[in-house]
Image (cartoon, rainbow, N blue to C red; front, side, top):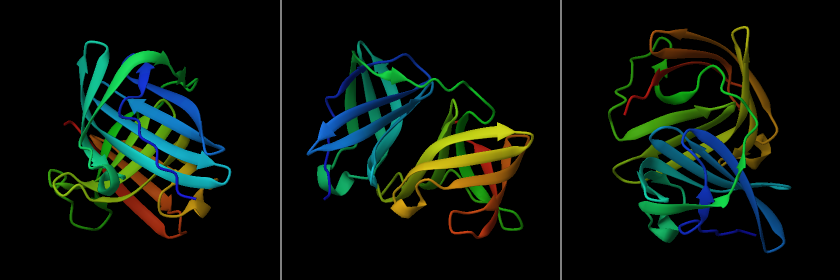
Length: 214
């Protein structure tokens, strides 16, 4: 059964640059909420774990108002249903702060291409972004002009001795991918992150991601 859930007026209390989790009950199901936030960007995602089901994700650059975050959305997976391009979140409700600590690769990254291929122009509206914060990750494919949403997945990750490992907790394209563990070799070259391994489909990949500055 499809669950529609709106957070437009959901309130919370968190400081900048954090990852928070929250749970709600709806129609007998426990909905997990995740909020990832850095100095200027916020992403919220709703999903189920038993059974695995992606519900929605949305995010964009925010302005820190008095007791409120005003988020100008760059993407909204539920846009066809709710038409939202801006949301407001009040900061007066307790969320659970993630216990994970800052580790390597924190930041926003844009897909810049694949090894051996022509580099992408990351200034164009069609973007694939990966947002990493305190051991959590999420990738989102979207178009900032048309508001098309192409997919998203995320969970938590570790880095150790040049190995970046993703643990998938939600995946909009295929719920069967939830629970998979994907290790990749990685290295940083200037502002680029080289990412080599196998995709969730088992295909070999060598991606190049570059830091998103704005």
